[in-house]
Image (cartoon, rainbow, N blue to C red; front, side, top):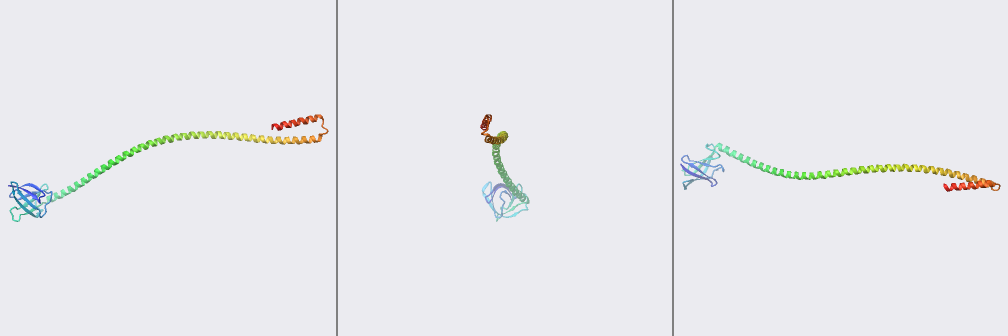
Length: 238
């Protein structure tokens, strides 16, 4: 049984064993197509090689395993043509590999999205920490403002009490002024009454003087003098 190496358009190379069965095994990393060239080289003699062109596929063939493609080639034919027999299992495996590849891409995309989300989460957490610090600072400012407001409220309460005391004293003084005004009015009334009486006495005195100025005895003259003195005293004390 001779050992051969296989190249598919020089893009893939594996070592195989082949003999009278004339089977070659290719990897499914690149799916063969019609027109691909198979270069088969004897491992014991690198100069001993043949080439074959893939001319057709048979997807009904069996013998595939682990994603490998079974190739049947007649290296003794003059045309050196090759038939790639690809089984249904291989087709399913290729589809599964494609799905796995898609899922892997989706998984990688999900991982990338997760990483992006994690980065965003980290950024958000940092922003939250900054906002929390700002909030703590604002809480301190609010506490300070509350203390200042409480202090001002107490000061306003004291001022309010002071104003009430002042209003009480003002009202008291106003009442006292009203009493003084009432007394002043009473005194004014009394003064007016006294003036009226004084004028009346003066008038009567003048009448008496005119009636008795030639026949008035000495005692009456003394009485009149006393009356004048009394009137002068009253005038000076009003």
